[in-house]
Length: 202
Image 1 (cartoon, rainbow, N blue to C red):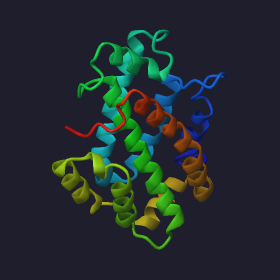
Image 2 (cartoon, one colour):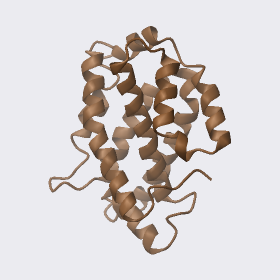
Image 3 (cartoon, helix red, strand yellow):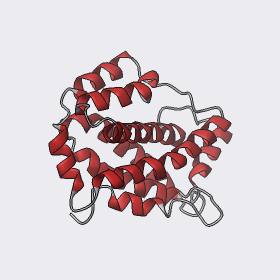
């Protein structure tokens, strides 16, 4: 593997915004897709998260492909749904974007933990980041399945070797944890501006 498992997504982040600073649909979704291989390395522990992220990416992509020029900007899908009063529906693109952003928040927090707490076990890093990000939006069932899944987290040392490839994994994790959050914060800010950042899992 050339570089680390993060190399492609870090490259992709440079293209997420247009020249005038607008968040673009396809480049944002592509970056999220490029993060999925990172989740594969977790094995069973992240199967739920991966399915969830994959489903939300597909939902947003399908909408984008239905009219690429109309939905070139990421927030245009949400604006259409807000106007049509369908944004709160569980199968809406707004909901898809919200949960995709939250799942990415979780991953950023997780890798931040791995960087900042070299003595933590993998499941400790996962559980801590879960409680800081997704937990407050999850119902009892989702929360329980998540907690069980985290017990399947791989050995930390082996995991770091696998995702490191031929690159400097600590440097790349640091880049990931500094480059991605501003984009995610912008999504939250936009969703909050239309009153949709606090939706909980049904």
